[in-house]
Length: 451
Ligand code: SF4
Image (tube, rainbow, N blue to C red; front, side, top):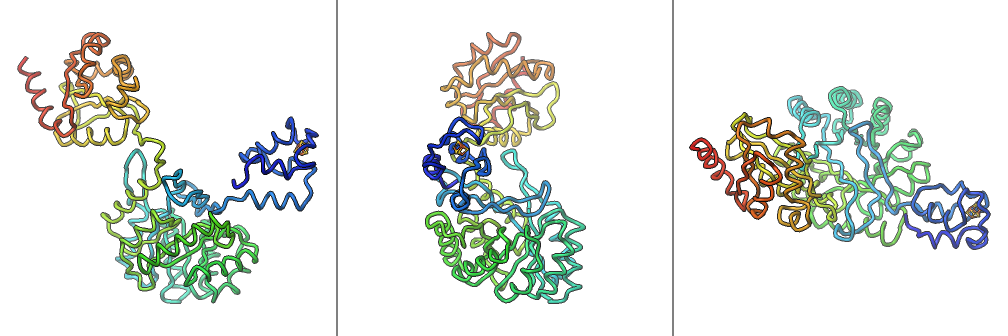
């Protein structure tokens, strides 16, 4: 939303002082407030003249258009970014990660890529990440060969489709065959005249051109053809080219409000298809809306997903995990019971060390609003009452023979209070550092058995 309520009010009838209430609101300023927040449409005011209506509609468009690719639970939404730098606010929409498949690749390589697209996924910070898109390249120029690749992707995966074919006949045949999945159609200056008239108005078009100036010219042509959902496709040849082009586009959209570049971008591997993964990885913090990888390698895939998740978390909101009782190493009646907070970094540090200890354990994770142990204790979110309530709520006592609760060493002072709150439990002060847990838990078990 580019306009503030006061700016909108000045453009309303009688300079925003008509106050006729026909929009259902108390006055023009109330209407302007609702309009600025997106809670009401321009059509609710019957007194706007067409020129003002068009001016307001244009001014209220986000500087980078929102684009949805694909359908259903695998749909990827990009665009609507508001800042140049993550620390200014946050980056909103994680880029879609895609895998490039060419119709000339050997069958075993194609089968392996299809398997990645349908099966690879990674759980981290309570989120599931995976490949979102398949970019299909017509390297053969043969229609039947390309359609065969498309059929296999449609049959074996549910990812969004990006169609990359120079020859208009091949491209449009694939477009018709995959319309139900709402494919992204890539066009160039060479095939735009034949392709654009054959596309439905709601088709997402990815324009591809050798430089930013040519991209702006091509996106203007696509707009003129009545298609508004546009992605700006660049090639990642070198790191400096990528950073320069992506920065130019983002600055033109946000700072200059230059409409022909007011769209999310897609970054493809260079023409030879072997662009360094470092270059492609740089597209994650550097504004890539869609990033297409050529090589599949599980370690690289995980690195990309981790970087994407880290860049697209809100720096103002601490990462958290679900507050519940987690089980490690098949806990039985002799398992240890530990307490920690739901700050993700604390949880993963503790959980990793409990796992490494190979000792059966329950980990009671309190909702401390994403604060670590000391901060949550200082804020009054990690106290004896909260710990006792969580232990009782999940009936942890019924899971073990000898109720013994390990509290973090950093809040050792809570020991007495927790024992008062949790009648029948023995409270033990655990290590101050998670790294001490693998040595601590076996010793705790030994002492339990000795008593
Ligand atoms: S209908 Fe239009 S002119 Fe009347 S109060 Fe609402 S915004 Fe103002």
